[in-house]
Amino acid sequence: MKPFYIYNTLSRSVEELKPLNPPVVTLYSCGPTVYLPQHLGNLRTYISWDFLRRTLELNGYQVRHVINVTDVGHMTSDEDEGEDKIEKTARAEGKSPLEVASFYLAMFQRDLAALNQEQPMVWCRATDHIGDMIVLIERIVAAGMAYVTKSGVYFDVEKYRGARRIGKLSRQSLDEQHAGQRLEHSPDKKSPHDFALWVLNQPHHLMQWDSPWGRGYPGWHIECSAMSMKYLGETLDIHTGGMDHIPIHHENEIAQSESATGRPFARYFVHSAFLVGKSGSKISKSAGKFPLLADVTAAGLDPLAFRLFCFGAKYRSELALADEGLRAAQSNLDYLREFARNLPAEAAAATRDSEFAEEYRERFLEALNNDLNTPQALAIALELVAEAYRRNDRTIWNTLMFFDRVLGIGLEKTRAAGQAAAFPPDIQALIDERAEARKGRNFKRADELRAILEARGYEVKDGKGGAATYLRRDA
Ligand SMILES: [Zn+2]
Image (cartoon, rainbow, N blue to C red):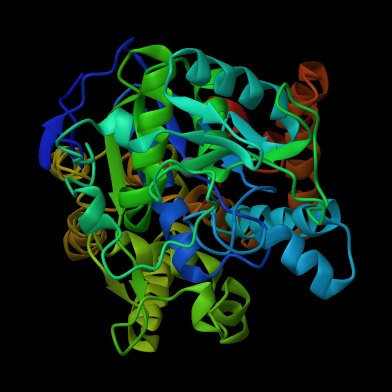
């Protein structure tokens, strides 16, 4: 296996990935709080983790990917202040919190599907894991790192951090972290820096569960610790999130998890940069109107143009959302699709590519293995196609398919559609029937259809995974 390098926020350096149990890589991505549509900035983050996952798979790793869904306990401020985000929307829309969460989760998952994101092994909803959170909080209390009051169970941040008070991930002291903030806090807390693991005595909160400390609900941070460890073990290989998660959310996840287990929580923390507006301002929900994937399609662009747009910038660089950039991504998408659509059948059926493609394959993988250098990888893919045109040698399909395992723009589908358009309808009907027969493992019928097609002057070549190529003999 080739070495894969990634920037680890813990060490502030690019490191070679050394998974705990190769070839398995455990990957946990902090998921959305489902109280509003996920804007393009949020989607960019998940697309980045899809690039990461697919790159690891391209290298031969088996990725166990978990994304959580926060449907309780995330307050309007990340510092536990204010109202529960889900309940705020529920009140405004006259729905139940469950309806709100399910509605916006479904919308988010539809967007990810339109962006060809691979399904994680597990989508885990916080409200389905309250028992796991309670067990974890009990362990933290037993370890002496949390205390119980009438308003909640709080994590003892000062005790955990000790004299230096520096956060492992943010490298900030508590005073720096909270500089300029007015931490209005419960008088029950020992320190304003302490955060809630479990909240008690909030009669207006709609979602409540019984616990050893009384009826209440979990804090946001404990959800990720409980769910990530449940599915991926007490030490994760890679934990991802947005850069805004570094000082509070991830710092708190580390503190809780390591207090409970006494082991390192995550070996690599990987953070993505923001998508910014034209003025350079962060695109966020609190900024009011925010762009959605529906706006991209309403502008006549393909959702996959947005995917390719994201591929064109490194995950930890800010990316400015601009019409020109999106249009350029659309034209790159069209360029690659056009090549696939018009690919001669012999080039598609070739088991080996022309020799010149080999070097591109190596360079593509090397770019991705170098801290996910997607812009460079995209340039290499476009260059290869240009070179194929220049040489008038299109035997590069295996290499393009290799690229598309990470690009994720569905080039095989485009090729098949282009090919289908080229057949007379009666031949296409036979081809479709044969595809169905093969899918249903009716090989007898598939062979009969092969004979009919051959008698009609077509050559039939079957490939891997149900793929087949049909070539008119005189073509
Ligand atoms: Zn999280």
